Image 1 (tube, rainbow, N blue to C red):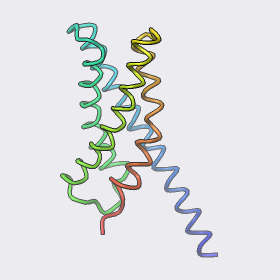
Image 2 (image 1 turned 135 degrees about the vertical axis):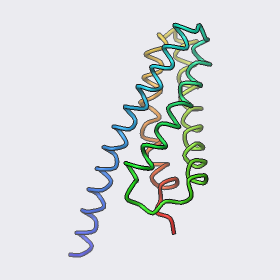
Image 3 (image 1 turned 180 degrees about the vertical axis):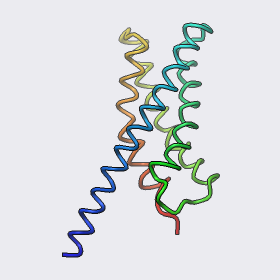
Length: 140
């Protein structure tokens, strides 16, 4: 019976964390998207370069919010180690997103805003689980 209670509690925590992850991700998407639009439409940067810059700004934002809110109840590793891990996961996500963005933008002629959104959705699940099991794993 105790094992069942533990499984239910762990499942509840996972769902709660994923919900918080989605909220943080939505905030990060607003940061990312706003900077992307500003850099492309106001500054005149090429969309591929602009999305790399906007992504980096969103990563910093998301790390701070996820460390303090989504995973705030766990014993954390040092912030330098944890941010490095978060950034590595994010860079892998960026590489995936950039390939998707490039293919949709350059090969298929998709509007850059739609290409951006599709890339975000694809990478969302990868980032959550990679960070859950590696970056924000309980410190020993």
